[in-house]
Each structure stands twice: as structure tokens, then as C-alpha cells.
Image 1: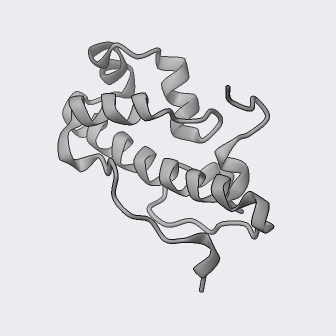
Image 2: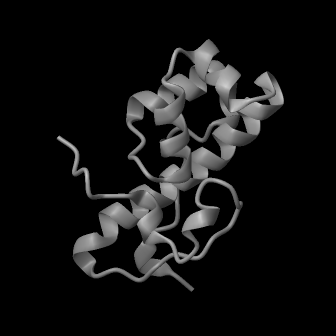
Length: 114
């Protein structure tokens, strides 16, 4: 069960840039929040790639959503970091958008920030 209060974009100091900018700044979190911070970073990275590829291949996110069989409103919430991306969402994007979607690639451990 997911926590409806958890919003990945709340872990960045630039929430409006979540899923859009290639690089954004992240907040500091206590040890207990590191897993969610890392999950937010993974989602952001995937959202940037999904947006880029969907627009390149389908011209609009709305058309991509229709072709991929996903709810457009949910898709946009995920890409903005207002909802949590599920593994199923990532896999579906990989199936429709190809290898450009970073499914399973390593990410920086939030405990080792510069």
C-alpha cells in the first residue's frame, strides 16, 4: 500500500523542475528518509527520459498515454512527481519507448552527496 502523502517532488528544492530539468537540487533528509529520497531521484530521472522520448516518438504526452494505454492524468502526475511511479509504469514506458528509459540503471546514493 502506498502512502498518499508521499510526493516525490517534495524531496527536491526545485519542485517545479521535477521530471523536466536534467539536473535538480535535492533536499537533505534524515537517515529514515533516504529510501524515499533515492526513490524520488529514480523517478525524476525516469520522468525526464519518458517525457523526452514520448514527445520525440508521439509528439504529445496525451498521444503517448493513449498508445501506451495509461491514464493521461495519472501519467502527468507521475511525471511531475505528484504521484509515485510504480515499477509497472516504468516497465510500460520501457516497452513503448525503448532503451532510452533507464529501467534498472544505478543512481547516486543520497548519503554520498557533494
